[in-house]
Image (tube, rainbow, N blue to C red; front, side):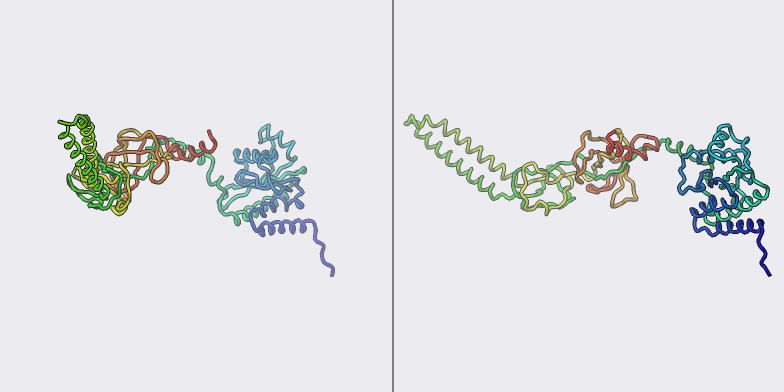
Length: 439
């Protein structure tokens, strides 16, 4: 018994089932896109097919990489958009050229071919997410249109299996994107208070600076940091060994000069030469007396006393003990603990427009949850190198209420004028861009 030879209808049906199998067997989206525009070409004999997803061409027959700005790609996208606007893209049909614009029809004649069939790709809610633009010279028969319609359902199912979520262009329609863009634009021009953060320290207000009165070595500190002192209390001592020796030598030199003056004064009645030397000896006595007084003054300066009531503000006594210092070198500060101000080091890159009386908020490192209010009093015009080694402007602020303990450090927030939110967010990036490109 001989096997029955399959007829044309059986072969077409077998090819149709193979196309469905190939679509469902695709491993990823790129492979499926290639199958959709290429594998059905032997069965339907079309010249080219273009796959559109969310209005953008993703694959074209015989092309491995789609050029977004190619004339054919632009033509297909524009035609599909016109079909969508007419509500004619949700059902499979032969595209009527008269439904398109005159320019699109002209592009059709030069870029595509006579008969085009549109296969929509629909999701589970029967909403359009893409489609196939298939073109050939011969008209499409009713049987072919029925097969292509069924094939479109299979292609939609295969695509949704690999990419169940809608493309973002469909999840965000143009009106919604425009609304979000408008809302973001309005938000970016919303005026906000400009502010910057900078390190800050609580420092004495109108304190007395205690500086080294002479060149020497400190041998003893008699006070501790933040210790209360009264007017006249001894604060520290310098090594006075050489000073005592200088004062003793100066005193003895003065005694010698005075004795010589008295001797010549007695001889002056009988000796004209001795009388002539009296003025010189008197001047020498005054010189030696000045040297002795200067030596005694230096000796007195070897002990430094407080000149007002307050607390001794300095870091560490051990840092100074045994260290040679020079005249005028700052040793400590005597300050009233109830009078303090805020000193801020505002980095040059963070400098904003600040006015006298601007609001300042201090958050101490030791108590970051509580806010201490202050107001700006002075802003330096010239930047100086701070303790961290970077250029910064000195900013002084007065506390609105009782100040924190002198010496505490934290972060200060300085509030400037109101500016658009976009300038608040992009001020630093714009400044960095200008510095990098030189504009």
